[in-house]
Length: 101
Image (cartoon, rainbow, N blue to C red; front, side, top):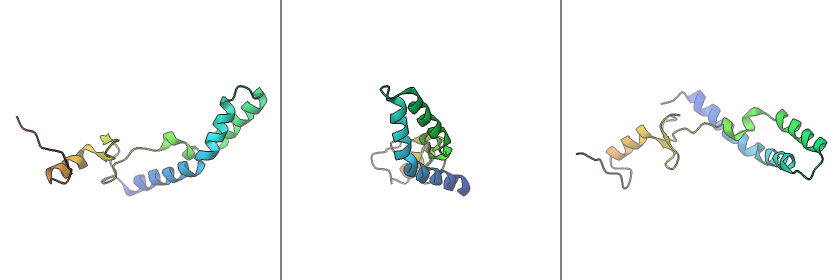
């Protein structure tokens, strides 16, 4: 199990990203719009830089939903390789069969 504080910090970042996403998207749209004057686009760039860092999507870490482990994460399953192996060995992951050769 991962530290509870690390998992909670990541959950807090996920909530902040969801809350700050519309404002960030609007500022990014202004910055990318080449038809606007350079001063207006630069001002939007400065406003974007002033926003809290934790509202950025890249600050969120992919973690296992079961254990909170940050490494060995399968995006499609939203769990780590170790949690997947445990579920598969108990027969709780449908379609997964232990191989032997």
